[in-house]
Image (cartoon, rainbow, N blue to C red; front, side, top):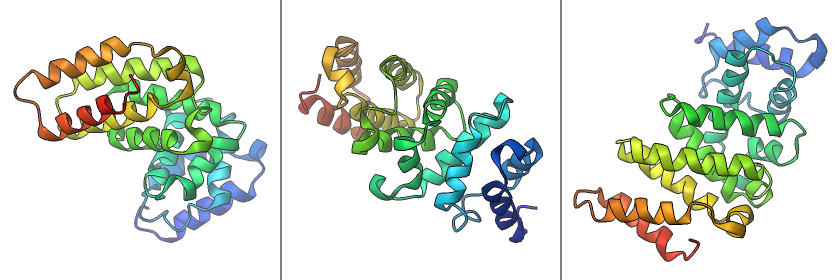
Length: 218
């Protein structure tokens, strides 16, 4: 089915033209089964993304719900600059974006998802986009995200993943909610010092840590 080029168009037409109350779970399951970013590149239209956001309030099965969130994250990953990213557009103004934010935390909390780097890139883009930087995550969720980033940065031995966590952290500490009280700033600096003085840290990690420290945001 993945190789059948007619399926993405058919699924997109079904999701965008069917009333949300009439959508069946099998349609979403089929979408999950056949989704590949490459074949859906031309299908990821404004209407299609809006339909996925609309579905977030109606899907009850967690596995299907998180799979839809993964699809949105994957689409966002290939959409370029935040200002032209259609997923971020809906993160900024769609009434169901709250569900999306909460689900992002669930995915990141797993720590081992195959979509981890895409999720972290999405979080970094959220913080890079003026319209979502301070409003996408509620303050409590933001601080939960901070806890996850610090924990997983320490526990994850993959340099690419660690750099992605640092990029997300750099965006997070720029938010107004963080700057009000700077929670766990001392913990962040302690973790940074441990990496710096370990003697065997990757040069890219050291460069990024230095960049964050020099920003005077902590």
